[in-house]
Length: 232
Ligand SMILES: C[S@@+](CC[C@H](N)C(=O)[O-])C[C@H]1O[C@@H](n2cnc3c(N)ncnc32)[C@H](O)[C@@H]1O
Image (cartoon, rainbow, N blue to C red; front, top):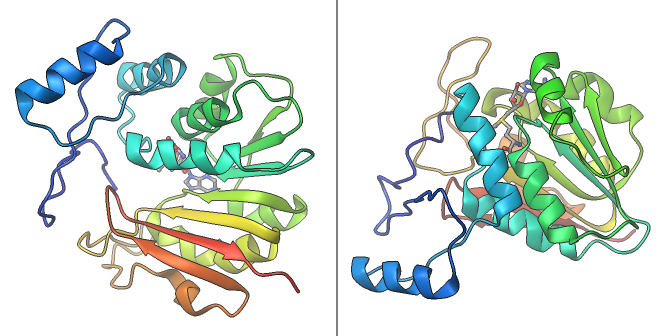
């Protein structure tokens, strides 16, 4: 799914991302907000901006939107000491940069990100990450069951593949662990990347009704499902 168009067509409000080649002060942002009549403004931290730059340089248009990334940062910040975070679908490292922004230099959390495209993963590795970040090259459908358990899983492989790993992603969650799935906007009609057939339901395999989970459909930005794994 191409995320380069950041205006939500079927929504009554629009999200538009603006990029600047310098760091913006809070006063700058407030001035721009006022001049455009914008209701809110989300600032992209400089380290995350570098990841968006990398995406632009290589023409990668599937990076997480800032609203999604900011939520990942919020969830990462809540991961307890000794915790583990998993991203499925590294892309060019934008989601990972948001996670690291949320961790704010903490060294008590391990972060693993899986990407099937070796070149992309190598590009991301050259950006230089703290020691507790591991980049794994592999197919999420094959490696997920071997990776242990996590406090936070970001499921961000293409739409048509998400359903095939959803059960294992829930199984990999620790009690109280959280799962965020991107691109669940019900207005987008995605296509299965193998068959090319339209994918109708955006809530893969009835995750919303999974008895192991408490879930909520977040209908903003690219649309997400956020769920928490119940204890027991
Ligand atoms: C939407 S992009 C990920 C964006 C990234 N998570 C971010 O936040 O910027 C999806 C990524 O999943 C990768 N991918 C596709 N199939 C995969 C698979 N079976 N296993 C792992 N990664 C896969 C693609 O190469 C692509 O880089």
